[in-house]
Length: 400
Length: 138
Image 1 (tube, rainbow over the protein chains, first blue to last red):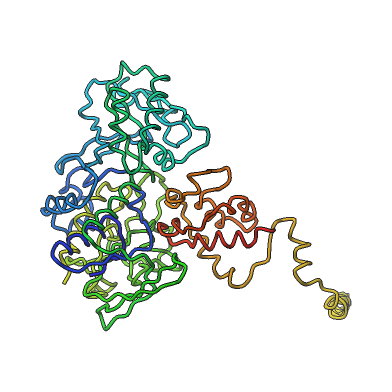
Image 2 (image 1 turned 120 degrees about the horizontal axis):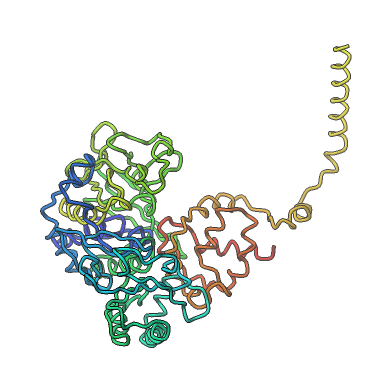
């Protein structure tokens, strides 16, 4: 089996297939939108049945929701980071823009559920040159003066980006300096919990968190990121590590073209443009899993018309083909609402095989999984993790 | 009266055409030196046909910033001697004169290609940096 794309769904499909004893390879041209996530894992905004009711084209209709625990167990077996949470209810997390985010799971270092904080006082510190500085927010959030927002000036001179701060804080000495800085600026005794933006270390962040807790003497948590930041990079690295753990090879390169006999794809040609000698690899497989994602990761594109990029499959919005629609037809004027543009994707049957305009299979041995499926908006819907996990698991199961 | 005016206009036009073919074709300014004389002030430089074809793929950058996290030179001297790879790639979506403003930052690139390996849209970052290096004298 060949999996195209190494996001969460692609990795899930590869893990599932290899756990059943199949030979799997992952092809990728780079990191995708999984590296742009904020570190929370959302299954549904309200409840699974309500999500299904509200949205008749949602991928949950195609998927078997009962395998969620087994799929998650498989994910946890190979995923090196600790993930906390529960399937049945959503937890409330504070994002670094000062908003509340609902999610089922979060990484261990970010797992501060605001429903369990109670009357404890929380100090939320932003680091000044980063975007996530809380200086502008007032204290009346989540009921009164429970959370105090403040901004901590970064002690080194140059303006920094989140990933660079995280790389600097990957060392105990730097964490000690940060602790001294916090101690000298703020009186910590009225507060029970300290919240920092997600910059505490890159590879050893749980150790660095413990180090800071040791110096300050109170529990330290990281906020949830709303835009691309360090948690996403950690997440993608952990996904790579889980592929490595399951000894699945990663082939770097872009799919150049493919060969097919009637409705069966036989061969993929992958060209690696980033290496100095443009080496081409040909891959033969029984099943091809398409886990390339939506616009951000380049899985679907609009050049002259809307098309899927690898196999040139047609795209749909609410079961209607959109290949020659104008983009304006899919855009709403309201900025903060979910845009229909991000809901378009591949239409598949129950076995996740992509269909064309006439309801026929495009290619028999292609399975689509992850955010490339139509009917849900990965950024606004609050169902991204559930769909990726389940569809990846199912696509891995379907391998011949 | 109307016919006379039309006749006058046609004679004028014919005279202009004759002047154009007789003189301006021989005295037209061509070549790289004339191009540079006209456009070097605006920092516009001549492009080859191959470069022109590649230019559309240069502007695929969506500024997600994943390359920044991989770049080792950025970690060492950010905004002092080296701009992030994302900034350099993203400036191509604007205009050609922007290229020359990146020149100071490109010289420190070690061309390790780590940025290219993570790019989600497949921007050829290394060839962009080579392109800027090649046009550094402008």
